[in-house]
Amino acid sequence: MSRFWQLRLADQVEIDLLEITSWTNQHFGLKQADGYAETLTLAIEALRDGPAIIGTKEREDIGPGIRTLHVARLGRSGRHFVVFRESAGQIIDILRLLHDSMDLSRHFLTVAN
Image (cartoon, rainbow, N blue to C red; front, top):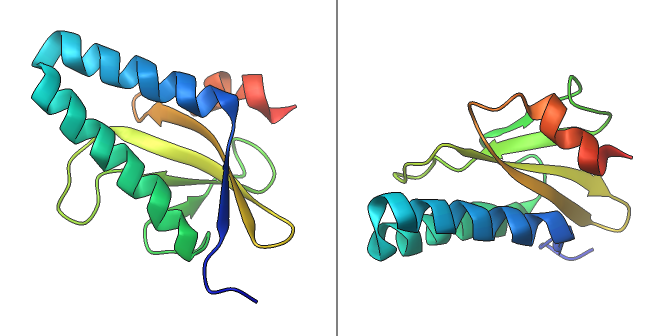
């Protein structure tokens, strides 16, 4: 078995990333938006090491098998969660990028089914 996990991004993740970086650019400028896009991307890429890396949390309150990883890690700041679940064959499905002040259950309904 490979040491690294395969990551599959839901279409909604790309939309979330575009909306987050657009909002950040409008409110804080392009440099900040680019830096935050990197923070989000690094958090996603960290999941190549598996669903149980330091900082992940089981979120059965959102749905069966759902986990989150907060992007504020390894000296980086941020206010978003990577919402994901493990799939067969050493695959992690990245489902959403959601702000930590959101009601995650409500926003997650769009991909839970």
